[in-house]
Image (tube, rainbow, N blue to C red; front, side, top):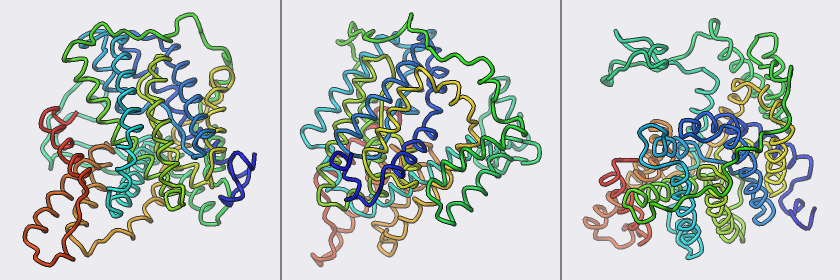
Length: 465
């Protein structure tokens, strides 16, 4: 184990890595139940989606651990699965789910090509350090927002409009001006889920303050137990557990390339590639940076291998019958629990594979309010990178700020990186044009120019998809 994962070199041990892997799995496990719900509108079997999600996440995460020695988990990405559901909707979609899987597979091949040619790896060298740190901070806020939503802590109210519940249930629609809505705190006394999140957040805060190893996992377990008397923890999932999945209607190898020659097919492929490029890049760089892996002599080389596994995961997922696989921001929870090597990812991968046969009933017991505090604490810890940003240089500060702000405010890692790079290029081109002193000019790598142009084209021609 020492030879494979180099635990001593990274200053860790098997116990810490396994706890970190369990923590990552628990914070990612929601996708096992959320993905089937999102994709069932395409006509895909929920059981088939559950199987593909669990097996795909397990296999690709194992690859990340064994071949790259990175503590990062992978699973079908949120956002892209929603886009897939719209494209392949049983009523009103532009293609069948089989054809959409074909588009995912092709996008994965393109992704692998971009990795093999070194395009993605060059981004690490080309991207200014301040933007790298901004990505880490932005992902931290993005994770915090996920935690607040999962934990039912944040609420939305409308001035003189329909209730949030009516809109949620589809009974009303609303078109609001910016001053007509307010984001605030939920009534903790009336919302038991939010109350449990608050309790869990206090537990996580105390354990993390005391530097107790495995604080986030302990928080999840204790919060789940406290949720039983509150009626939030779903103990009914254990009353009649089903440990074996239905293998009769799987979506394995159900790809359809009949629309390969159509423009709409390639439009879908391009959108998949573009969003995958920025989402996975941001997550891999942000989590690896937080774990201190990019500062090592072999950091860039290993990041390149991680990107290859990440790209391969897209096509592997399509073959199994699921939406694009990508590195998960929730991996930061395991990293904050001490995960530094591939043993963390191997642990997470094994748990995903076991979930197909045995863990599903137990995973279903853990409420969102138990995982939410862990995600919020991760946001706190990732915020520390903000001190490394050059705030005194506005040509750096503004792009970094937009990168940070737009990730949570637009609910998209891709938007934060895209807008940040566009503003970095624009502001510093202007600076270079009006600055005579050579040493005060900012070097803009040609690849950053390419990314900025592609990002701009995305918003102009793809309407921000």
